[in-house]
Length: 164
View 1 (cartoon, rainbow, N blue to C red):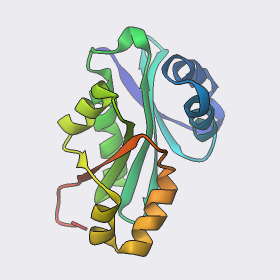
View 2 (view 1 turned 30 degrees about the vertical axis):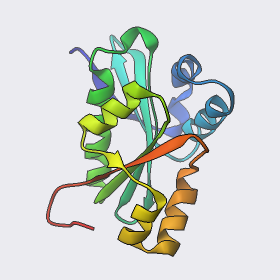
View 3 (view 1 turned 90 degrees about the horizontal axis):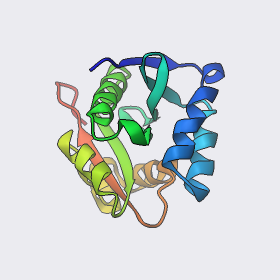
View 4 (view 1 turned 180 degrees about the vertical axis):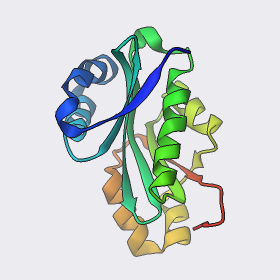
C-alpha cells in the first residue's frame, strides 16, 4: 500500500473538501465541512501526493476520544485505506491519552459499521455511557458527539494499564 498519512493543520485542509463532497450530502456535508475547517485534529491519507481519505477526530473529555468523520474517495474504497486511516487515528488518540474512543455511524451504513467493528468497537447506548462515566458525563459526551437521529454510537476501550 503506497499511502502516506499526515496530520493536517487548520490552514492546510482545503484540498480535503473534495473528499467530503464525494462522501456526504446535505446536513452531514455542511457539518463535516465545518468541523474539517475548525479546530479538530485531522489526518489525511495521500497516494502520490493526492488526498484520498481523511479522518477528523478530537478528545471529548480527558481519556475519551471521538472519531467525528472518516471519509475515503469512492475510487479508493474497499482497498484497506479506511482501516489504515482508522488504525492511525486510534494511535493518535491513544497518544493523546484516550482510554476509550467513540464513533457514530449512520444506521444502515454497513461498510462503516463493519470497519469500526473490525477495530474492536461495540455498539454503545447512552445508558452504557452513563454506567461507565456517570449520567452527567455521559450527557456531555453525547452532546459533544452531536449524535443525530438515525446514528448508532460505537465505543472501543483502549488496551493498556490506564483503563477507564
